[in-house]
Each structure stands twice: as C-alpha cells, then as structure tokens.
Amino acid sequence: MNILVVCLGNICRSPLAHGLLEQKIGHKHLIDSAGTASYHVGEPPDHRSIKIAAKHGINIQSQKARTFSTKDFELFDYIFVMDKSNFNHLLQLATSNLQKKKIHLISNQNIPDPYHRDISAFEEVYQLLNQATEHLIKEYQLS
Ligand code: 4NP
Image 1 (cartoon, rainbow, N blue to C red):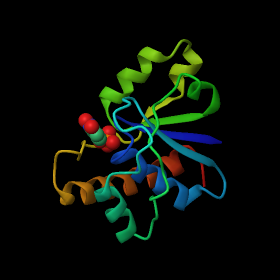
Image 2: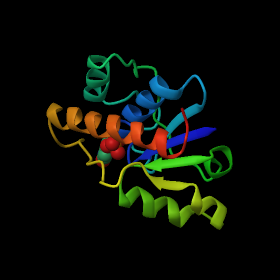
Image 3: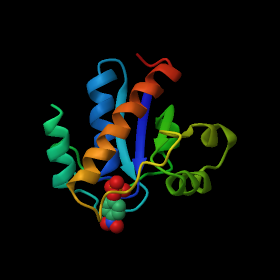
C-alpha cells in the first residue's frame, strides 16, 4: 500500500507520523508526507520534531517538506490527516467519491498543531501519533 500523512505545514506533525509509520511498517509499505500549505516547501522538519523523534530513536532529518498535490489522490491508497481542517481542505480538492474515500482522520481526536507552542507540545504530539499509528495499523490491517 502507499500511505500519505498530511498536516498544514509538513514540518511538525506529519513528519513525526511519517517517521513513526516508516519505523513500524516501512518494510511493507511506501510512506510519505505532505502539507496543505506551501510555507515551508523544501525545508527539513522543525528542529523540535527532529529532536523529539531522535529521543524516541527515529531519524527524520532527511525529510523535506512538500505541498499536497491532487496527483497524490492517484498515487496513494490511504491519506491520513491530522485534524478536521486538513480533512476539509483535502475533501474540497477531491474530484470523485473514490478520492474522498481515501481521506481519513489519523485519530478520533485532532492532533493539535504544536508550531506556536513549546517542546512539550511536540512530545504530546509524538505520544498521540504513536497511539494513533498503532491503532490504524490494526484497523486497516497494515502490519
Ligand atoms: P504542522 O505545523 O502543520 O504540524 O507542520 C505547522 C507548521 C507551520 C505553520 C503552521 C503549522 N506555519 O504557519 O508556518
């Protein structure tokens, strides 16, 4: 399967989800991430996401931010988003029911945007995403 995780900037939350999924199921599936906004295109993840990932044994330094493209609806089987705002954004870009059905919230609670908060918010996001990815691997039988 091809699995895409999406947030707003593709520098805080989705790089962590990308790293977690690569660690857990990257040997079986293609994992990528993208943002709905293009403010940070070409940049590595936020230094706080890099630090928290490293603390948990995951290296995300070589990731590069990119913007979600409507081509991603063709390339990916599952598209997991961090919050309702990402969900609604992608829903508006989808042009068929098949595309709409590929979009899923990564968790039944929004993964809060940590960008304007301190490092503890990044640890919180990591913990939420660690749980959410475990759950979705079981729910979608990806292990
Ligand atoms: P992310 O966090 O969506 O988790 O990557 C953000 C990063 C940057 C901005 C907003 C959210 N920004 O406004 O630049």
